[in-house]
Length: 440
Image (cartoon, rainbow, N blue to C red):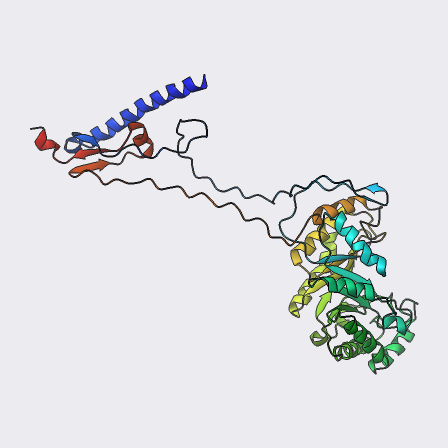
């Protein structure tokens, strides 16, 4: 039935095309209407559907359809991974088109933190963690110099690949979490600014060079604008800045070093505006920010726009010509806040920090903390399968083969009737210039 309908339609179209051609010829007047002849064979047939011989009409030009994201690559079936006894099915979403900014997660201070990075990468569909993040203990000065054996496993991980980054939080004072009063902190800052503690940081720098990790990122005196740590800035900002500069100068004086120093306040004003603690561009390589989902009831938009918030951080770093980082971020006062997780990941993807590290333990985390399932799903879906491999190049657009042209017959003026009419007529028409004399 379909073949018969195509033949009937072809006959009708041929009749219509012939009538159109005749009308065009007659409309040109007596000097060109007589003596029309064929000058070429049929034009090259239009593309046909495989398995048929019926030519198709020339397709209208349509804008190319650009996919939103490439489809996820096909993978062989694997057992469903579990974590803490909970099944962890792979997200059924497309792989994002570009690689994630270099990231990691704080999983544990010691050797377990290194071992778990491979497990987290597996949970993320093979997305590689390029940042290892740990903290030196701040109990006594010998801890801040690097306890024996503590840094070895981290250094080994860093040396395995050239594109990895070791991020090390370094306290600026011993008894760093013993809630010392402001008066005692002020006294210690005075001693520090005079050089009383320089030797401890020289010992740390020498150990990092000896372990062949001289390019370690040093997050020195983090969250100095708050009240939690003994190394806080608030009791004497000027002495604190002098102390920071002494530490950096001391560590940079060690032969073979290539350290990068990260100035990292907590988001918002906290006890003092963190800009009052900024020690200067000469001793700061990165401007970071620790940003948790707090206080209760604060939306992500408010976290961006608040005084000394996320937007101020980005602008301040740009003003000083420094890259940004997020050494600590995660959930907190607002519980399993999927909107925060979605927006923070989008913020990181937009502003492309030098590195970022999720704090992955309860209440902040999403992999080692089962109490945040909605945020966990968003984190995993967003980062799942993201690699440094470039997106596949689009297939080249086929270039249509031009129709061969034929020189017109001498003494004959061709009529331009269009490819579609000429196809059904079987060729071009022309009017002989001597038709008048031939007809007399």
